[in-house]
Image (cartoon, rainbow, N blue to C red; front, side, top):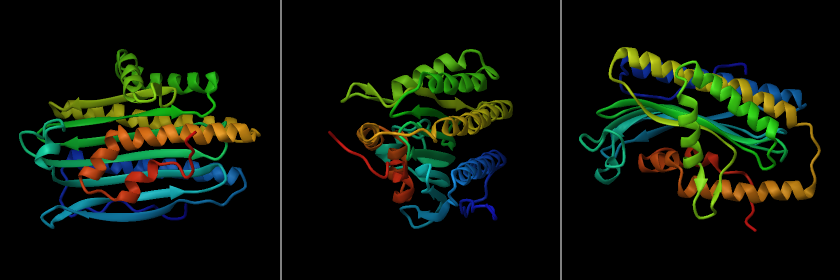
Length: 294
């Protein structure tokens, strides 16, 4: 990338914690996008991310922040989106009841990064990752990453979980078992009675009671992002040169239908974005470019 991608526009002054979080998510976005573009170059394609900044308005017409949608469509990455956003406003009374700390006061601030990659080769796993910092009457970090292979490989699954466990163990030996189970429970499609993929970690409500806790939970959130940046490109490079059959491509497309069902019916991030007036194209970038139901 010859120029630094844009960062979200925000008309409000951010406090120190909010600014640190926003700056980190933008930096992580830049590193991930550079790595994905490097993979495309290795595959012989000069594919780059296209960035679309967007702004949002609150219901009263006041500025409500915005974000930047980043999408690459290439030889290896059939469609990958890496989005960042920084938004603020007021939840509706009904939606506020479902958000941590918002029932007492519906005002909110949120900044984060969200990523979904759908791969051309069915042997290469799709993936999801997001980390975020939210402020209501409470402040907390949340996020995680999970691997979604149409054709699972035990080696890839083990390496993905091992790397996330390393990130967790650096901060708390209990984190990985707790957050792995949370991912297994969350990334499940009840009406299909199947998991969305092979799991990962999912955490939420790492709440701040002091500045020390901000530093501690922020450091963990950064390490989750860095763990993803380390392991996922390795898995892509391991599988992207494998040949595939028409039957394997069909398996991928049917699996993508299950992925789309989860994101449209159960995913909290999709709901949050739509309920808070986010950019629809950025919210729905998680959907695969092609899918089948059979």
